[in-house]
Amino acid sequence: MKALHKNILERLDQIINDTGKHIHNFIDNSHAFTRKRTLDAATVLKTTINMQGQNLTNELFRAFGKKAIKNNDKIVSTSAYVQRKSQLTPACFKHILTVFNQDLFNIQLLDHQYRLFAIDGSDFNQIWNSKSKNIVQSATHINKPYCQIHVNALYDLMNNTYQDCIFQPKSEMDERKAAVQMLKALNCGPYIVTMDRGYTSFNMIENCNRLPNCYYIIRTKVGRSGFKEIETLPNQDCDRDISCRVTTSNYYYITHKAHENIHHVNHHYHQYIKYRSKNTQDRNWDFGELCTVKFRACKFKINDSKYDKEEWEVVLTNLDRKTFPLQRIKELYHLRWGIESSFRKLKYSLGCVEFHSKQDKFIEMEIYAHMIMFNAISQIDAQAYIPQRHCKYQYAINFKQSCFIIQSMYLISSLSRDFERILIQISYYTIPIRPGRKDKRIIKPKSAVYYLYRVA
Image (tube, rainbow, N blue to C red; front, side, top):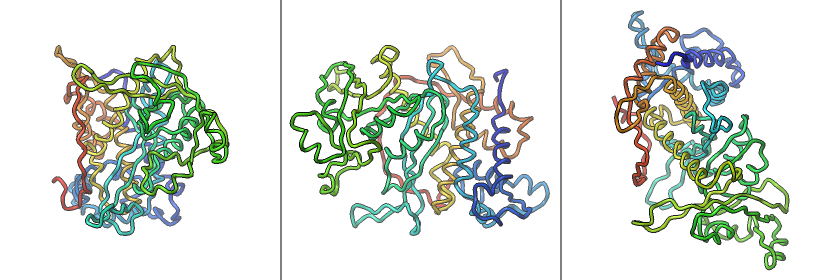
């Protein structure tokens, strides 16, 4: 255990209690939480944040069972909990997430200067609800419609915490618009944000160019589906400054495209192509009729051509070429995979695929709650002592086992007394770090986990 540590669970408790005291700042019902009950606002918030993937009855027994057995009393019923939870709003949990992120423990910076973020989205399946706004109509008449919510997340890669998120119905998702919204709301010093190919657009690049303290690394499409300036780059390592003229005027585009290298956003042909992918459309433009968009294009090879066909990737950035040469840009973009790993941990280590309701509001609450607990566990893991053996690999804390230990002790222990014991316990469970491993990504369709099919 490290000599200097910060009691993360005690701080989380304080934020939850403060939110409970001012609960009417986040809910519309002035009569809610006015009577003194066992399930006050802070208790409901804390219970929801600490939930795992078991059924609701088991979760409530885990939260209140010890106290009820000691007092020979009845466990809080699922009906009572759901009624109290229905008086809350997702804004309560968003406030807790925001306040928690304002004072993280020992913030890690790139080059002691930059925060390093990644933006990406992930789909979460809901139990079928005919009243949900997240209904997705199947493309064929054979398959039934289903409910799915798309979560756009802003993730801190070096501190392993979720900074912000925006929910969208899967059928109406717009990842670029959500990314711009999160970046505009981000309030911190200089930062670098990494994004995958689906985020490439002139509007995204120009927004990042104009935002203060914002530096970006965006992977873009290579070949005929990308920018025409990118298509002409040779198949070799190269680093070029590119300037693109962009217009929203169809008349200007038609009259100048023959003798001027110009791009047209919101092209008039898009309206006639019904099934064009959303990723090929630049539907948003936040600037004037005529604009010059500048960026740096970096092209590099990502595989060993000795055995495979050559594969090249291009990323766009506004980082300084002297401080961030081509090789370093490649390494920084590689770190973006951290947000993909975080989604896996959020879903399967914390149980964010097994919701305890089918209502949209409750689903959003639980996703926020799991992100709060994810951040708290990441901050605790960062303080635990990791014994390094004389072996081939370095070791790190086993996040899944850490989730189990912390969530088991959070509700039943004295946080001021037992926090050091928690740090000691999680330091016993480590896993090796194996850099350079490559596995083919297999994507399988998954359905929502219904209430009766939960792990005991």
